[in-house]
Image (cartoon, rainbow, N blue to C red; front, side):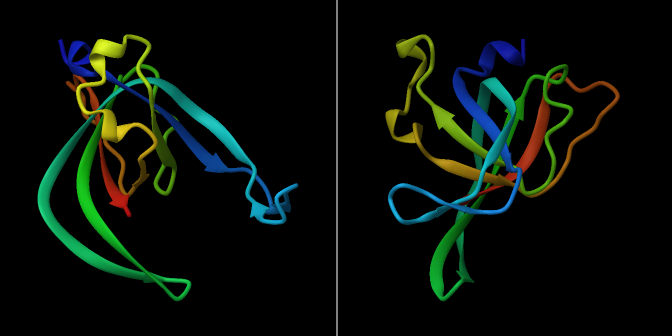
Length: 124
């Protein structure tokens, strides 16, 4: 039943090496895909916090990313989840979510878990 509510799709990745100079003249970090498939994002609160990193100011919001328990056990803290267009276009209830990225900030294990509910931070 929990997986039936996972109507979005996402790809979870983590850095897998040193940044390399791309054809566009920018450095890009190679990424390894850890999980790709159905997911669900729920905002915990509309409260935001300012985050300063590399002389840039970002705004962070807390949320929960739900993934299927059986296929998401390798997801770790600091992995990045990017929201993809769903395979069923009618599932993309909020088209603005496609392309958004969240960072996993914690783990979730539970004996009776119906979903892996990971705390994440939306960075904008």
